[in-house]
Image (cartoon, rainbow over all chains, first blue to last red; front, side, top):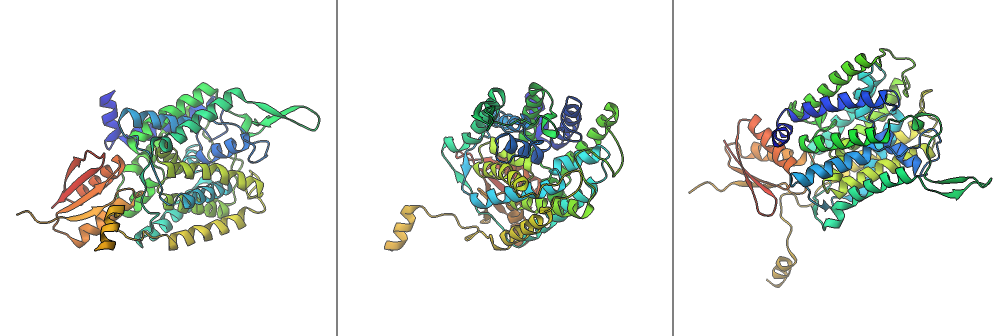
Length: 383
Length: 74
């Protein structure tokens, strides 16, 4: 166990994690998840939002166990290896907004970076403009970081703050199993507060145990290896460091091979599962998402893992993803296989404008200067 | 007497800011030494990897507060 843990912390860590995701995601599709959606952090956040009734798009409502699995797997790894550290306070409200706009961009493309790579690994060439947009968004975010962009520091918080996201993850699993129906429709039939799709992508899912196990395993190894699908691009562009990128490449290669083996690989542009072929808005949607992830410090998966190891700011980004996905559907901005929705483009442009404004205006006030304690402040005033 | 190190306090900052601040310090102080304080294992690993790739020696000290002090020397 400790030898494997050591390996995960080495330069092989991201590669091993990429291989595990590349293996498990296509298997989850085989077991029932939607096409090329073995894992999609944004789509699953959208399904969770729908299951909680935050949006009422009937085909995309399900409490996906993979995501609570991400949080709890990371939580376990962090506890086991003494990396659980409750922290927060780094511009939480901005992080919530970034999560919301990241999800809106993802809903225009129909996937997060994880799914963009998995779509490519399933032969879906409409992922290519999406990945190009992602790279553009990351590059734009890096331009702000080079100019001194910062959301400021986080600080150690009480234990209760760090445990909140793992507790919410347990709550989602309880609601999945209990599926309470407290409400009544006009006809008197039981309904809500939990909604599950009867048809469409939300109705397609692997058995709960398989989904949860996959989520736990991925959460555990990714916490150790710091696997990040956006950091991969960021570190390569910024530092020419291939450490995290090797993990993404391992994911694409492994998932392609497993898809071929399982007969799930279909090369082409037209008729790909839960994807549209409007290249402009595939590009722009992912550019928005890539910018938001870079400004927040990591890909959506990474934010889930961080929230499991006690980072409450990452937890707010995660909640922002769920809220933003709900907004995207409520504002008729989430794409369908037919193409972008009527308000998808305008929300994308608006989101880009807000994120650019955040990139331009957020600066750490006193870089490099340690914060003064109240005693020091008093002493200075009396000096 | 050993040279006074340039100190980078990267505690509580999101990726990739600890790496960026350290890189700026390396440019300002190319012969070192530089002392970087971080508060997560991720930042510790990222800063160490970047500095080692740039040809610096890195000595990591785990502090009792759970933070890490990285001494970067040429």
